[in-house]
Length: 51
Image (cartoon, rainbow, N blue to C red; front, side, top):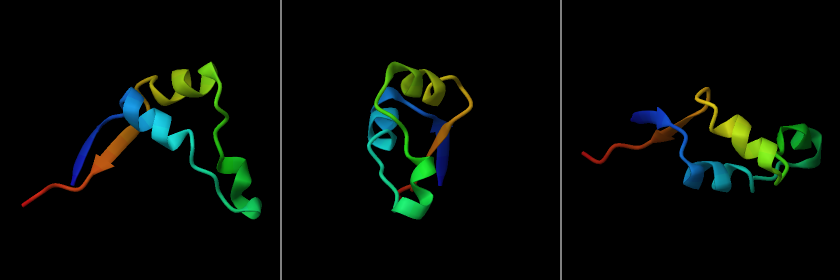
């Protein structure tokens, strides 16, 4: 597994995730503040390493 700071490509994908109604409070809004938050250096992406 490989962790790295979230990229704009990752942030755009995460911002589209929608959860079932009971967990919908985890949904991000498609607004500039969402991307500012996701790219502020506190969010990471996890990638599966190829062996």
